[in-house]
Length: 356
Image 1: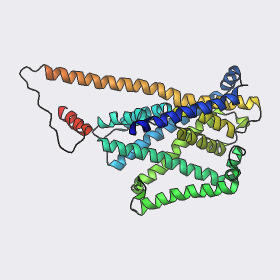
Image 2: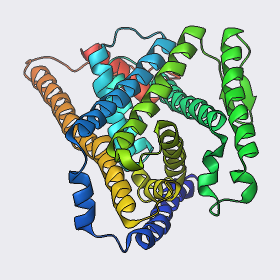
Image 3: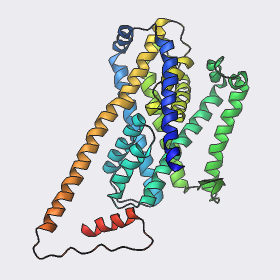
Image 4: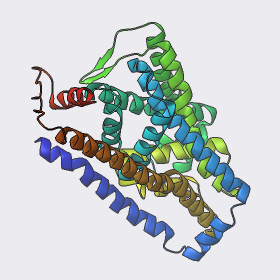
């Protein structure tokens, strides 16, 4: 049964890509590549620079996610540089491949266990980083809906009527902010963990909670800033509107399990922008492409190089250690010490520490 479940989400993701790709093709079939390229070239250089700065802000905030989780675990010996490189590589891969154990969690496991963390600690770190992102999405989603309840009207005709009603949007926004308020209260008042079926929400210390409320919105504001600065000023609906559309598009893209949200993000964003002519469509598509270049593709290329260099260095260390041990004549290899109750990863970790 477990093996079957492992294939479900990849199949759903591929189906989401196929369906959204079809609708995206229908939306863009009259658009020429030359027109899109012209729209990209027309973006002023200073706005490209601002989009690049927004990317740095977003990935710096993502590194802060990891740092916050390490502080929650009481781990302080890992340098900011190592955390930043690990976080950047993790998110660059998971953004493009998908939030799977073969992208984000595996990279973190390889990196942080080398620094002395156990498998259980890495699991907590991954979970807390994911919740921090979720918390930021809920917080900003609540803010934009309360500030402008008419935002959901942009999807009128695409969603049921009651969902696009401003009153509904206001109620949803207040509800989202209420969830954040309960989380803050639970942390400040040191409430017992909240159990929802198999889900367990353990409130962190107020210092950790406060950092979460700063880091998560900062990452999303930076990511939304990329596409905001790539849009022409003449048709830019304002940052609050772009942020709201971005949050909806990015959330649906993640929920679809499509690799990189490919197609899902684009079709939702283009639809919600309420395009009225071909020139506007070209400009929006150009902005989305710039967003993918800065937030997805360039980091992915850099992260692949980082992973290869890291694994190469680990292999070199292992080969050197093996050579030193093999070159000692008369030495008898010490048998491994197996401690009952420890899993394979923990045993390997202890053996590595002993070898060092």
